[in-house]
Image (cartoon, rainbow, N blue to C red):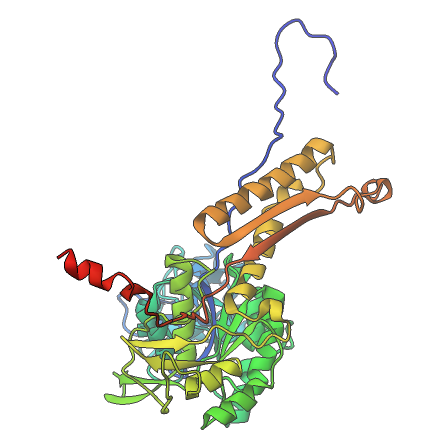
Length: 503
């Protein structure tokens, strides 16, 4: 405690008041994909060589990756006679103490260094040594020599990787699998952050499906789509737009929903192998969650890998377009009726008419399936989720609820464990209301308000260190059904004769 008496001035900081609330990042994609020939990593290497013929030894890090660049190796002159050769390891430093003869002259050859390194367990766990020549040349003492050239694989299996340039990342994704195509589809719509989890292709479709769904390996690391749950801790971003283009079926989508609910994210999913609109509508009945939108059919377009027109994933383009809308318009706008880039056709015939509800598109939308149309460009048509609760029937209703919940919660870490004075409660309420006013002005909400309810915040509740702050909000409804009422009338003819006479 500060001394009470002081002859002078003291300043005490009082940091009360509201804090600004920053909306959580929403345009972050979580992509699960395959890429069998993605760019591999490389192992760090170094070569210790001398003028004497056959004295060179190449050392290669035992594991692939940039960590190998921390390795160092040196040859040491023991400075004594008849010294035996030995290898010691200190962290990432390897020392080879060379053998000498009765005159203290170094006698160790390159082959002997190779044998010693590869035969010492600690050293062999770090590096692999090979002679670059015949190995008979005698070596000499050196200072530490660092390894170079080690690089991590850009897309290691079952590991969340942050991509900030989807177009540039295609060069590392290889030509096989779904990753390169998905990155291209997203890049056609927007430049956005993507958390990529690459999974291995299995021996058959079912094995690949198991790899996509994933689980936890023997080391406790999450695999497949489960690895998205560790993205925020590893990468500092939380994926909120989820999908596995070309790899999703009912099983994959169902598992994705569990991930989405944990992350407060939204899943875009195809209608599996549905060949007709009726099959797509039945497929949608597999789900009853607000966190998913089912899309049928697929797009078509030019594939630069095969130099041909092929079917293109609508899911990948939905993910990219969702990120674009979040950045350019806001999360209150649904995916529907926005032009999609990079496509030239639709994989199945879908009859659509703007004024007629009795169409293929109308049938699909009435069964909560988003479809594709061609009017002034190719577009998604439909805003519905698979929710059984009408409160979250629309895509933007679900995402609004998710984003508000995370924004309000994440913005108040600072308040946890603060002394709970009435002034703190007033600051919390006013801070939330300030954010609601901002969202209202931007058009993201119709309105919202927060308040302190004394009925639930009883003395017993407050004494236990609990505080309830209520708030409500009204999301922005999408104009899904615009109706004009047209009437014919003769009342504009009443003064017809007078107007003629008046000229």
